[in-house]
Image 1 (cartoon, rainbow, N blue to C red):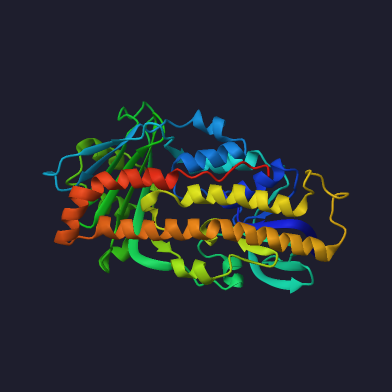
Image 2 (spheres, rainbow, N blue to C red):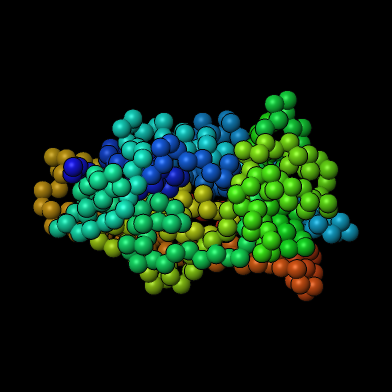
Length: 406
């Protein structure tokens, strides 16, 4: 069976749903393919900075999400060497919140027409078909599309088709957890981070009841067996909390086993984006398919939101008249339409290339410094980075992807 769609987006994650909603706001339909049978809620929560909220406002869902998440007033930064004083950096003038991933994805999906997301639709191959692309699904369905967008994560089929290599393992792992306090956690809205001895802990309240936490570290061979066992994961985290305040230990202690997960930290080598094809003809990638990065800047999800707004705008510029109206719903000349789509996706690639390279490179270097256990690096980190890092986080997050309408 063959189905024809103007725009096919692979992946119903943050980038895919943001792009689809941006197009929907501009009057353009898209079909989103999701390999799972439901929205995949992994990672529990994400840090969101000014750039994310500008993107969320651009697609019209920022205000509803603000009401469900506290504004973070500051970050407490400390070394796990308790002799080091705790430094506090204010976020005054910046919009920083810990956003629940489930609420974000559900809000995005609920704003779309009910037939936009096609679940249980795994892409197995892509091939040329004149001005179109033929997308083969595992159930035998074939989709023909004028525009193919890969938002299918770190193991992206579309990125592979464009010639990108698989993201590289950094040698570090992350354990993430999510804790709900029905009677309130009483710990306030501040973000707390503890670094040292090759470890990085973060504790981020989403609101009065929900708390997100994480640990990143470089595992030994013995640690590798932890990945799929939540009991061992929780025991491992508790064993590393000896230098952490008791109130933060209680957050981990009260985490349910089904709210703990582990994953390897991967990134795309920046020079691949310098020379590689972010777009090719009528195909492009966005989100983690484009710029998988380590979590030190808290910008992975934020960058995916930026991608979605910019990409929707670029596609609309290609498909719609300058006045915003389609030519009888279509551009009559297929060759001209294909040329405009290609140009639109090239513009997207140009706009996102250096931003992606910057975020990937900076995240990787900050992670290396934070988790290095050498004497010199420890001194520099504890005495310099603790005051420099929060300001850099704000600068990287002070980015404006622009309005949705062109």
